[in-house]
Image 1 (cartoon, rainbow, N blue to C red):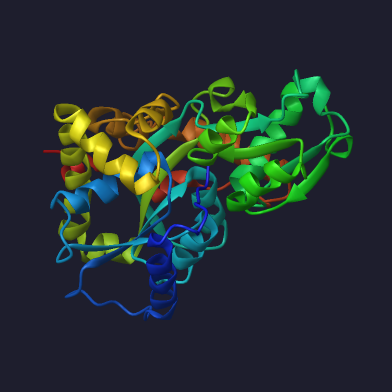
Image 2 (cartoon, rainbow, N blue to C red):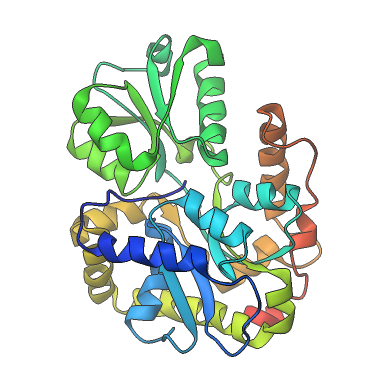
Amino acid sequence: MKRSFRTGHPRWRVVFACVSLLMLASCSERPSEPLRIASSPWPGYEPIYLAREIGYLPPSKATIYELPSSDITLESFRNGSADMATLTLDEVLELMHGGVKLRVLMVLDGSNGADAVMASPKIKKLSDLKGKRIAIENIPLGVYMLSRLLTAANLKREDVQILPVSENKHEEMYRQGKADAFITFDPMKTKLTQLGAHAIFDSSDIPNEIFDLMVVHEDIYLNRHKEVCDVAKQWFRTLAYMKQSPAEAAVIVSKRLDVTPKEYEEMLKGIKTPELQENLTLISGNRPEILKAGKLLNDVMIREGQLTHQIALHLGLDPNLKSCIGD
């Protein structure tokens, strides 16, 4: 799910400066400049930051903008301030619904528990949510998780009180007792756990439905193909580094996320990161497996009024992707 941090950390003073610069950036193509990649805090996106830290994606190749929330990432890609972005599948459908031409470069991760409904101790079972206050960021994936939660709980929308609020406010709301449950994700999920909340429903209850993707504007994909493909190759190279040197990678990443290495390792248990061959199975060839998840998600988004019609997700996929991201 989409993914932000509290902004008290000194690093975020720099982040907000970067946001301002990003939003002022020209939408015109500048082939001689590094690719502009927009992302936001989420454990599944960390390999892209790690690639920068260990020199696999130096500034000469890519400028990675660490934005504080997914809605800013989405908008930066929509308005052309970013050439590439880390987005969820639902956000990709939303962009395509709005006429944005893009290509899915790779699947970064699948959520298998990291997206969750965190409830206060008084909420023991799903049916206890009736009449309760549920905090949710009003973005497509948040609404999707709410829909799947209510279905599992056999509840209707009018049975609960929905509180639209940015996920970086969830910790404060929990401390103040202003909501009974929170549709959220790591690292906020871990922070709420530390305060006494527990997961009453999570993405492991709906496997193979929530995916994070690296997307690129279609014109950039076509005109700067070699550079774009190199970003993908450095991603998989970084995954290999993480497997070969897990302790070193965990130290670097945990510092960035402002958690302990052990907490970071716990976060990873809720995330599945597909390597090269699984990526090719998911998003390339004649029958990409991600189309099934896309159809299910599309149906829910239409039912929730987020989309008006079925999106032809296959138009954003390259059947010959292996020539780009393969060795």
